[in-house]
Length: 549
Image 1 (cartoon, rainbow, N blue to C red):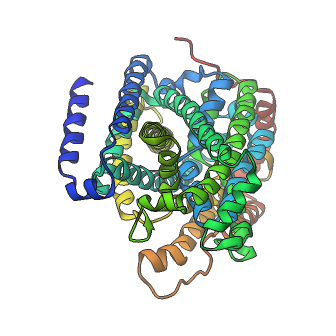
Image 2 (tube, rainbow, N blue to C red):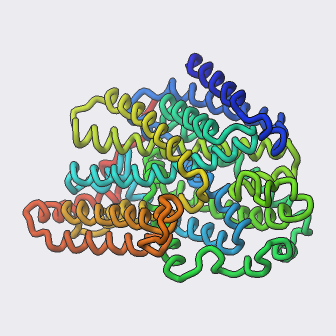
């Protein structure tokens, strides 16, 4: 462990040494308080990882922290998992850029939680063990369903991971003057250490600490913003309108999402995608029973809802402050230094000086590390638990499964770094929107129907789920962002940025059709098993309990 820490320190120092000196001197002076707080957080979380590594002895410990997390702790951890770089940096940057349309993101993100609370949480805990594929495969074919779930999970994980890597790279670039590529590599290495050694227990406590720090930090920012306007949001909005180049149009919809199809599609992706995110669904297996799972969602919904209200104030505060005469220092060649994703970071410097910038930067970095750790763990579990332990080698031991998980963590980390560098210029809230669209198209329909529809069969779930996944991925590739902005083509084949309206509908229809037309004996047996599944889903009889240490 200490050898690894030494290597990380050497890597970090070499990366700083390789940075462009002019970049630091001209664009941002070295912020000593920020750097101190940044490294205090890193050392603290590595200490948590070391502690968790000593307690992580089995596959259950690695994937679910032994099921020993309380509802309140898990609610904070879920909020920490969900309040990602896209939430803090991306949405505040979108509000800074487009005003009201950025708030639409916040509302849509929140609406998914009642679905999880009323339809999913209790049944997830009663039916599952390590991943959401355990529920979908409860009465359906293990090989087909787990293969599909792994593909869906990995697609979501990679897209979501890109967003976090971009946010982290830009953040460290602003804070240290480090080259963007080195910054992304540093985050990748830290993420691999957290997950490989500490598993879910370390990830959970990093998420809890990060949630507390983030909620405290943005609350202070919001209070400071409102203090300058005598705690009147109306006065803040008036000042934001005066300072923004688009004037009053920032208070109306249409600046970023200009047509009803895109608005409905985005809302559907964020709402249903929340209930299909593998790293969020995994959290329901870390509590001892269904009651604690329900508590988790209630607490998480409260924390997340409060956070979105505060982010709206922070976003409009960024418009009012950064576009004023005093905010000119944060612009280079007419553009905000570090891009719009860094609006809240610059605002923290204006409100609280170097010390508060250091705190918010450390919190933002904590936000990113906590989320990428959860994502990486979800990706690793899809490969090791769903594919290897249940499809390739059902007789695999705990030690073999955990070893493969750790190898997968390294691979996912490398992939995240490569794509994070490739997608440097993308808005991170948009990238997360795409991840949610795939989660809503590939994961949610199968999970929801496997719990509630007796008629679902393996053939219907497998074919329909893959059609939903392929449709979502294809429409993303041939849409305006990838086809035009990334690949450089003149015009997009699919005209809408957000594919969820089309891909989710396609997935549900395909699953229904191929299940209804399946009259095989296997399908009849699967329909008969629904009754036993429904009893366990609602009563918890036979569900796994917490592991005693």
